[in-house]
Amino acid sequence: MSNVDTLQRILSRVETQYKSDAEFERAAGLSPKITDKWRRGSKSYVKYIPSIAKALDVTSAYLLCEVDMPAPQELAIPEVLKDVPVAFHRGEFEGLTQDEVDALARIATELKALRQE
Image (tube, rainbow, N blue to C red):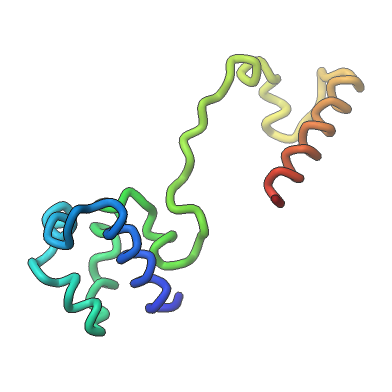
């Protein structure tokens, strides 16, 4: 973790999500003017990562630069995927035809390519 990167992520989100530092500080339950102290070099924000993350609607891991995604994405699971055999979710392919396995392989390949873009 780089303190500079963590602070940069915090301040960037504060600027885009709140009208003022004071509004953010109230939402996060922080002392007034603490954001100014961070800008001047205080690293006290590390103590408040959980409440900062909640106020900014991101994970603590994101703020600490442990992951690149700000928050876990809520996925809308289409009905068609709900019909996929439970065994498939465990990595077992019993009950699937070869055509179904081949189709899943094509989809997995396309998904992998999309994630690399």
